[in-house]
Length: 246
Image (cartoon, rainbow, N blue to C red; front, top):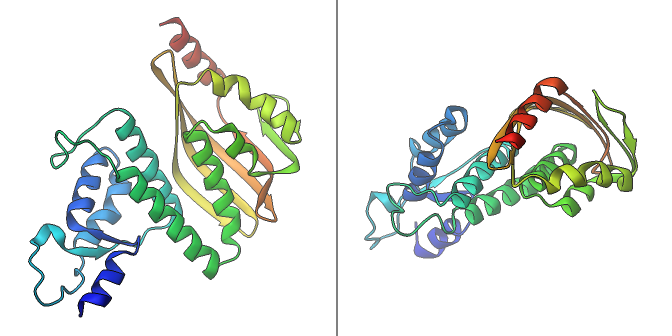
């Protein structure tokens, strides 16, 4: 391979250095399902190096092929690690600068690829975009994912309809959350309907409160038209009350 082609491929978001993948893998030590595809990528054949390349094995470039849900879940964990000033064996003293940006760029890349291959991917994409908005505590980004007359129903509580009502429903609770992390365990898409099995985590008064959730999203035109979440309200309220007392 000549240098021109090598450099062009190395600049693509889906080609990662062996070092970057190994350091990312360390951040996923408690998430084996997310770590597995990274290990598979590390076991693959690296990009052929052009004549005169002097880099060692850590500079090997390997192609990463993940689905959007996995990439978004990894991004959420990397962002959390960076916010907590976590370090890996190779980032001692320098931190995780650039890691979240690289994963975000990769997520945007595969999102674009999936849109080109599968227009129905819009349904999955808008749901993942909304979840990303929660993880960033960006209420504007969350509300932008809905149609004007969207329905939001936290099943144990009354439903609300319309962007303004959804914003009001979410605003108070979001304001009391110091950090948010929604982990998508499983995701299924059938035409314009998206199902998510999640663990929603909220940091309140310095304590992480988490609740298992099953979500149903009906989409239209690339926006969420109806959102229904099923969870144990009593369990969540008791955990939230305990966090606020501590």
